[in-house]
Image (cartoon, rainbow, N blue to C red; front, side, top):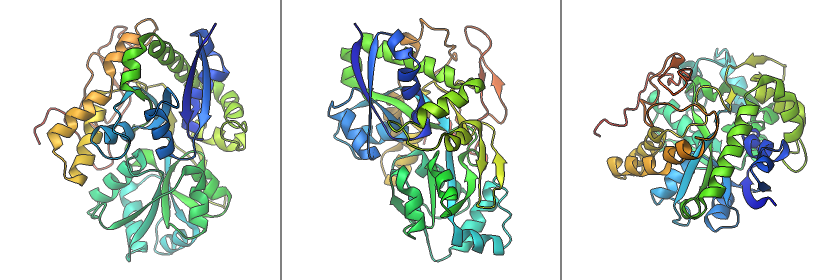
Length: 391
C-alpha cells in the first residue's frame, strides 16, 4: 500500500516535476500516493507547508532563505531538498509602454539586457511600477540585479507590487503596474490578451538561474527520512523525464488539465520549447534553456546558491552578510541530495559550492561518471559571487 504524501503548488509550468511525478507514475513506483494541492499565492503555500497542511511544496528559491533570515513566514525552518526548475521567467511591459520604448528607438531584440533596461528606465522617468509574484523571489532578484547593474537605485527607486502569477496580465491591463517579471505561461498570456509585450527572458540577465525548489519542513525531513528519500527520487525521475524533448507534448497536455494550469496546452508547450510569441504581431523568439528541468546539473541544490540569495537579501535589508550567507548555505541540503539519490543514476558534482556566475560556457567537471557538464550561468554584467570571499 502506497504511503500518502501531500504537496502544494502554484499553477505554473515549473510545477511540472510534481505533476509529472504523480501523473506518469514516478511517485507510485516509489510507493507514494502523491496528493497535489493548488494554492492561490506564494504566501499561502509557504504557510501550508510551515503549518503542516502539506508535507512538501513547489517554492520560490529565495523563500526558504528569507524565512531562515527571519523575513516573513512562521519562523519554521524549511529545507531545500532539490531544485525543481531553472530559468523560465519573462519580463513584459504594457502595450502603452512598449509603444513609448519603440518610438524612442528600442528594437525589442529580446536579447540585450543592458539596452532593454536603459530603454525601460528612460521610458518611465517618473518611476516604474513593476509586478512580481512575491517580494522574496527569483523574479525580484533578477530585477534588482538587472536594474542595479545599470546604476538604478534598487529597490528604493522602484515601486514593486506583489501580484499572484495568474493575475499578472489582469494587473497590467488594469494599469496597476507598468511592467512585470513572471513565470510561464503567464507572460505569454499577457501577450495573448493584448495587455502587453515581452521585453526580455530571464536568461538575458542570468543564463542559468535556479528558480523553483522542492521545500519541506526541516523537522519533517529529519523525522521521515524514508519518505523524504522516496519523494526526492520520484521528483528527480520526473525532472529527468521532463528534460527529454520528445516528452514536451505529453507534458503540455497533462499540465493543461483543469486540476493544474487550466490553460491551453499550446501556451504551455511554448514555454517548454523556448519558442515565445513576444508581441501581438506574432513575433517569435527562440530562447535556449528558457526553462530547464534537468541538463547542466539543474536539480543539484548548491549551497553557494543559498549563500548568494542570502547575501543579496542581507545587502538590501541591512542584515549581517556573513551570518546570512551561513544561513543560506544551511537551507540548501546538498547532503540530503547526495544521500537519497545515491540509489539512482544521478551524477553529482565533486563540490557542493561553486563560484556563482563564473561559467561563460558549458563546462565539464569532475564527477563519479566523468560525464557531468555544468551549464553556463553567467550574469549579463559579468558579476561573480565567491561564497568564500570575506564581505
